[in-house]
Image (cartoon, rainbow, N blue to C red):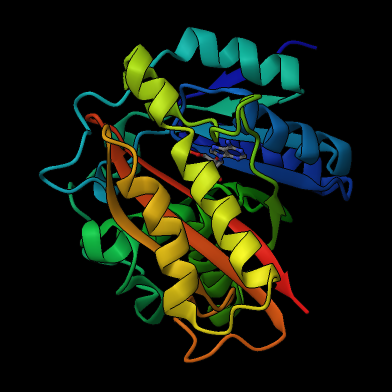
Length: 286
Ligand code: AMP
């Protein structure tokens, strides 16, 4: 069966109601389009676990700041439909901005304040309120039992998880591992803006994460030393400009005073040429 396209909230509700009436499980994969193998892995994970899979393709203006790249964000719905279909989506929900925000900026927004003051939230004020608000709307529109998010955007994943818990939203938030190029660069729609030299330099994010993992695994107890081990690699790359590199608690995203045995997350962000890239990795300290 070929993937259908829904442009309206009513059309999505109708499709999902018909699945739910016989007890079928609806899976939702929210995206901003320009789909790549990372997005496809989310759709494939949903396909394996759900009776009906909808991928949403919506470049959400609410999560872009003034200085952000809303106008230049890459878009190609025809291509997206092909990727979504191949990965097993039943439906692509591609609403116009007016369908999602008929009254312009909504009066009601969702803010997961404790998780969004730092890291990406510090660089992009209001970004996560925009994300949480549109995801809450998509959950209300689609009524999925399961929703799939990439670990690639780790802070976003934690924001969505926490929102679902705090607001008792009846959705299982499923985390999917980051899909990477052969040289370690995390797939991202923004990678198309990298020139050839920048593309080569962009592998420094993954290499820096590996340096952080090695430092933590070797028994380093001082978080600042782990952060510095990551930062050193990025500052050694002339085309990259470090934004932050930090070892944090995986749930609260706080910097620990001291690294004790347990799970941590390494977060990194850097500009490579024009594009600003983010990446992260888990580390288990024994
Ligand atoms: P975006 O279209 O960038 O908003 O991303 C939509 C979803 O795809 C988010 O849950 C992202 O975390 C996820 N995603 C983006 N890139 C990757 C990747 N390289 N691997 C796995 N998931 C990804």
